[in-house]
Image (cartoon, rainbow, N blue to C red; front, top):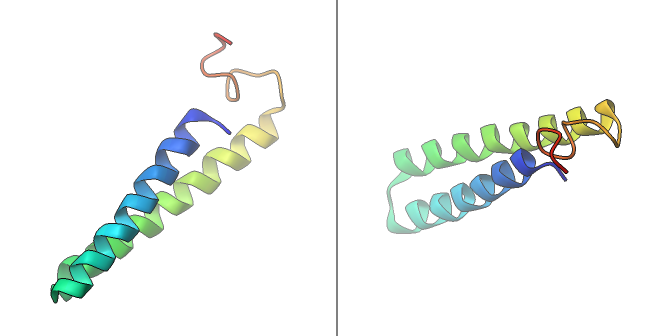
Length: 68
Protein backbone atom coordinates (compact mmCIF):
# COMPACT_ATOMS: atom_id res chain seq x y z
CA UNK A 1 0.00 0.00 0.00
CA UNK A 2 1.42 3.42 -0.93
CA UNK A 3 2.59 5.63 1.90
CA UNK A 4 0.10 8.42 1.11
CA UNK A 5 -2.75 5.91 1.21
CA UNK A 6 -1.66 4.78 4.67
CA UNK A 7 -1.50 8.37 5.89
CA UNK A 8 -4.96 9.12 4.49
CA UNK A 9 -6.33 5.97 6.14
CA UNK A 10 -4.89 7.02 9.51
CA UNK A 11 -6.46 10.46 9.12
CA UNK A 12 -9.78 8.81 8.27
CA UNK A 13 -9.72 6.61 11.36
CA UNK A 14 -8.76 9.51 13.62
CA UNK A 15 -11.51 11.68 12.12
CA UNK A 16 -14.09 8.95 12.77
CA UNK A 17 -12.93 8.68 16.38
CA UNK A 18 -13.11 12.46 16.78
CA UNK A 19 -16.61 12.49 15.28
CA UNK A 20 -17.79 9.86 17.75
CA UNK A 21 -16.35 11.83 20.66
CA UNK A 22 -17.93 15.04 19.39
CA UNK A 23 -21.36 13.44 19.03
CA UNK A 24 -21.14 11.84 22.47
CA UNK A 25 -20.26 15.18 24.04
CA UNK A 26 -23.23 16.80 22.29
CA UNK A 27 -21.39 18.93 19.75
CA UNK A 28 -23.31 18.01 16.62
CA UNK A 29 -21.91 20.71 14.33
CA UNK A 30 -18.29 19.80 15.04
CA UNK A 31 -19.18 16.12 14.71
CA UNK A 32 -20.56 16.75 11.23
CA UNK A 33 -17.32 18.50 10.26
CA UNK A 34 -15.34 15.46 11.45
CA UNK A 35 -17.60 13.14 9.45
CA UNK A 36 -17.00 15.23 6.32
CA UNK A 37 -13.25 15.09 6.92
CA UNK A 38 -13.47 11.32 7.34
CA UNK A 39 -15.29 11.04 4.01
CA UNK A 40 -12.71 13.17 2.25
CA UNK A 41 -9.77 11.21 3.62
CA UNK A 42 -11.51 7.93 2.77
CA UNK A 43 -11.83 9.04 -0.84
CA UNK A 44 -8.17 10.06 -0.84
CA UNK A 45 -7.21 6.60 0.43
CA UNK A 46 -9.08 4.89 -2.40
CA UNK A 47 -7.62 7.29 -4.94
CA UNK A 48 -4.03 6.57 -3.93
CA UNK A 49 -4.63 2.81 -3.85
CA UNK A 50 -6.22 2.81 -7.31
CA UNK A 51 -3.51 5.04 -8.72
CA UNK A 52 -0.82 2.69 -7.43
CA UNK A 53 -2.59 -0.36 -8.88
CA UNK A 54 -2.98 1.32 -12.26
CA UNK A 55 0.65 2.41 -12.33
CA UNK A 56 1.99 -1.12 -11.96
CA UNK A 57 4.28 -2.84 -9.47
CA UNK A 58 7.66 -1.28 -10.40
CA UNK A 59 6.87 2.40 -10.65
CA UNK A 60 7.64 5.33 -8.38
CA UNK A 61 3.98 5.53 -7.30
CA UNK A 62 4.33 2.26 -5.38
CA UNK A 63 7.88 2.43 -4.09
CA UNK A 64 7.90 6.01 -2.82
CA UNK A 65 9.57 8.33 -5.27
CA UNK A 66 11.59 5.62 -6.95
CA UNK A 67 13.96 5.06 -4.03
CA UNK A 68 12.97 1.54 -3.07
